[in-house]
Length: 475
Image (cartoon, rainbow, N blue to C red; front, side):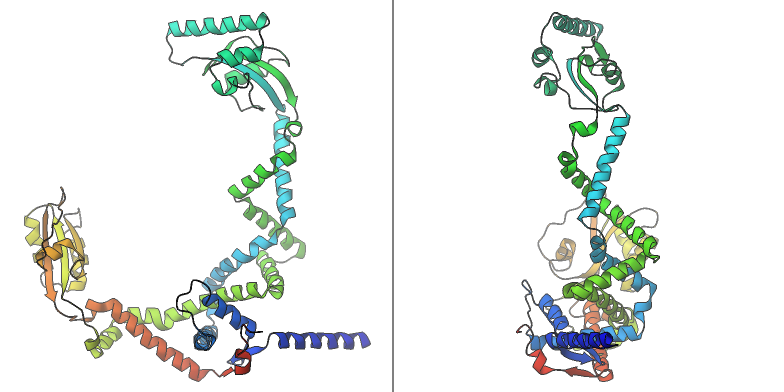
């Protein structure tokens, strides 16, 4: 009983110390925001390279608006959507998965790869060290060339039989210049590394012996075997191969497989799902690393912010044509151009007759439907017309510059589409919402955003502790 009381006192003291070290800077809808969380967000968004840096005082409102939207998203239970859970888990796992394994896990995998190589190679007879002399012969060589090559290799073989040093002969006469420089020495090799014709003689030749001349796809060879059946580990100790194995692990992305195996091992051992393994690891790591904690929270909140902003502002504005038209009509005077525009198409055709045909097809059709109309009625079977549609200002398109704005410019035709023209109307200012749609959408989104934030600020209680705010980045 006494021990439990003492433990409780220590725990309460620990909590008090933590609160004093990281006091609450504000509460939003009764949810406390610690100073460290605010500092993390502020410093990340106002670090080096940020052009429009904010003071702490200026940043407060931005931070609050951000938090309000996240609270609203949670109230709509957007964080319970399967799509959200899947995407968040993907972001979180990018940070957590690599921490599941350590250097010992990688070392074990490296050693396993090495041991497997030793077992495989030794089961095939181990490694062989050999030397060879090559008299190169093209596979399509004439009979005369074949005879000359055979005579040459036979003379070299006879010289060896009479006591000539193999390395000296290889250095002077072998056509395999890479090995000739080393006296004919070949790298240590296991079965399967050379062409069958070469291997057959190589492994039939005893240690210290020289083979008779034989033919392979490369020409005539003479082989001298120095050592056979040497264990892989004797030639290539683990430490000499470790660096290359580590590179192999990274190149083949084997770390991910090692991580999966470790997660599955923990999952079976603790009788929990692989997802729970990652969740538990995340809790352990974030309990001791505030930066990681806030980074993962940033992923979580950011996904919610995107989804609810899409619903409340971005998609809502972009897809509501009636609201956009009403907004445009109400604010028409705001939308002006610094010069005339051409609303229409610049096009090239295969024949002169198609110039007029295009105009007839589009006559009386609303501008927004022109592209679809041309695709269905003109270019449905084959491309008869190349078209660029839009609202052009001077300098946007050479054809428009020449035929609409009377600019002295050159319009390059193409071999397949030599005939060029424009069709549309020159206008001094926007006549309808579609003429400035992108700008109207952006402006209407701003209006929706402000109204939404105002509504959220009225709905949720906000308390800012100015004395704590004044200590941000100053403690």
